[in-house]
Image (tube, one colour):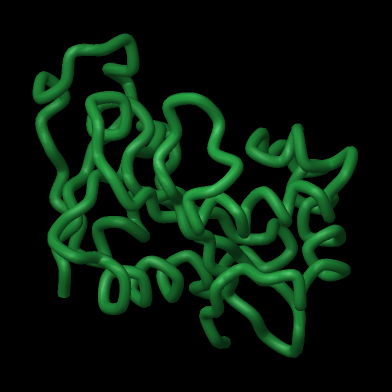
Length: 164
């Protein structure tokens, strides 16, 4: 497995990845499924600070690749604001449904922690997502108290991840 910055080199594979993720209920790809190639171009532009929707900050996306197949993706928001700190977090990731159980998410998060994280980041996962919680904790994520944020997402778990 290798971790690479998202690029158009993986355009055709990305189309397959998006379709599989969407079929398995990963909501992030609802907008991408109709035109994955254009969506990938926006992902690439967003990492360069271009084509950002109103209020968004630059966000880089990296793919976990094996034999030219995308096994998973991870995103890191490069700036900070209250919405990022309290609602969505700095880092988001998923594993291709057919590749779950292989350690892809852990490989992605450890790589990001060691290679891209400058100081610390907030990660948020649903309290009923035991797999994601396990990945975050195994990578050194520190569970924060739920009263550390004041929003409607009190059932989400919030973690702080420090640079390696």
